[in-house]
Amino acid sequence: MSVYACGNNTCSQIVAGGPSILCCPSLIFLTGVSQVEATFSHILWRTESGWKWTGYKQYNDEISIDPEWKVFISENRTVAISSTGSLVVWEDKGWRTLHFQNDYTEATDAAAEVYSGTQNQRYSDNLIGKEEHESCTNSDHKKTEEDCDGLSLVSVEDDSMKGICLASRGKRKMPSKLQDNSIRKKMMQEKLHNASCGMQTLESNKPHIVFCHVAVEDNVLLALGKDGKMYSGSIPISLGLKVTEVAVGKEHSMALTTNGDVLTWGGGMRGQLGNGEICQREKPELVEHLQGITISSVVCGGWHSVALSSSGDVYVWGWNESGQLGFPSKSQSNHSIFGSFEHKCWCPKNVEKVRKEENSNPLLDRVNQEHTKDVVNVQASPRLLDFWSEHVKVVDVQCGDRHTLFQLDDGSAWSVGMNKYGQLGLGHTDMTEEPTQVFNSGVTRIYAGGWNSIFVTIPC
Image (cartoon, rainbow, N blue to C red; front, side, top):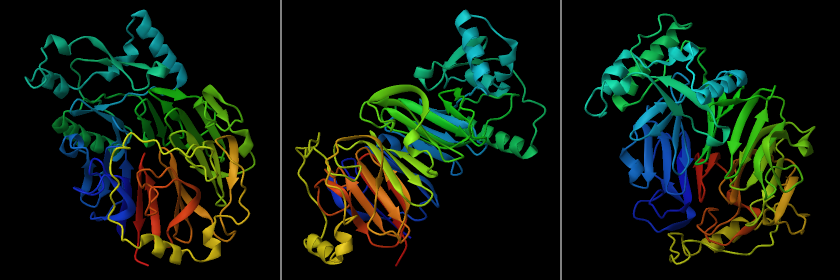
């Protein structure tokens, strides 16, 4: 297995000491890579030896991560699903466990009680354990005995949902009964690990919510439980449907239900909600244009959206300022905050000649020989993006801020959209408005950061 990356390298997140822009996929010397999380300034790699940071120095050594955890990052946030399924967030050099309401009624009741200044015995089971109480008196925490007594409010992650939970500080023993001894054992092990990492744990007699996926940006967090419930901040979103996947962009969110329906909400002033309008929606709404099509995966770019059907078809909508939807765009702008940086590349001098020879097959010159010439700047409803052969289907799609990656079932990888930082991996920095082949075979997984692309391959 080999891992290649291209795009923004201003913080040495791809190659230490390399140029600020890498427009050809460069080999990454990491083994056993099984998950990649990429942001503007740093990349988090899950390898066979544990989690490894590259990029901005602040993140290299500060955050200690259990090898068994699933981790999700944005530029300024690090969130993880622990080995017991709890959701934790890194704050102030320590992990903090997030508390979630089990249902919408309970959430609104809790908020009402907090705002009215009342205290309810139902939340007394959130008392921090005795060990945490004793640690509060430690000089490292700079807290007094009085600081550890009484009630305090712990704000949750999504301010827009105004979710609030009660955390009670005091002495309490571990609950005597747990439904599953194996979970009890894991929780005890995690408790010891948390203590060593400075994590504050919230224990509860309520049913333990087990999370399986998180989508995070600096201003939003969506969490998905194994039971199909979706949470925004600490508040469950009542849909009446089970959800299998969630995704977030800079201003909008998406969810995929078990029956293959797509829901969107949030900011839609660039058409990214897919409802045919330029508007905003506070609550999840069905994307009616995809009714009758079984969708298997959804992905958010910065301001565009992609849905992949079970038959391998790709539907795109939203902002197309850089051709990220795979259609011609009105904009030919190459604006960049790094415009003053000199473009240097380690690509072979004859890379363009080699690429032209490899793509000499006329079928590869265009994604679709009858591709429409219509110019699209904002696509407000889902639109089918046809690839060049009916016998090849798309198996995965990943989105950066303004570019899109496609993996096909023949092992090839394609890219389209913004390319100012070489994130398309094509050997140049010109915007591309139609998907262009990066690898012709051997690709097993693809990942996209804001201005980066990562490809995992096997020897052909």
